[in-house]
Length: 196
Image (tube, rainbow, N blue to C red):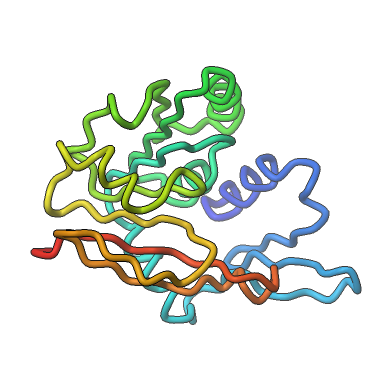
């Protein structure tokens, strides 16, 4: 089995019971709607500009997924980018126990699990921080500001394009391709140091 097929098989294991809603091929993850019509979720190489931006960010060598919960997006990033070290951080012991099982089942050598709060974790070496449903952008920056470095980029999953001002940082809203499938506003807020 080639490397792509191995990743596809492992993503299928991760999706488990919901895998009947998705078709996974070498370069495309597609979603089946109620009428069995298939719509593309992600298709490389002709990615839309917004997805290209996120794909470029994910190509960094060190990623921190804070408030990872069930491991999304960290587990998927680790599966699809085996050369990237992905740290999944959560303060809930049961979630980390579940992720320990997932990591073992999927044989993820590049995933590291941390049971701690973001306020107690040193983010100074992180290149990319990803998070979803954790807190407001301003609250997140307050929690990590003491030890974040100037090169770190933060990608937060958000439900709408908000006019966010964070002193000392620049923000950019990136539409998600999931909006078309979910029929809801979804996107990413890219936060970086003003000098970056």
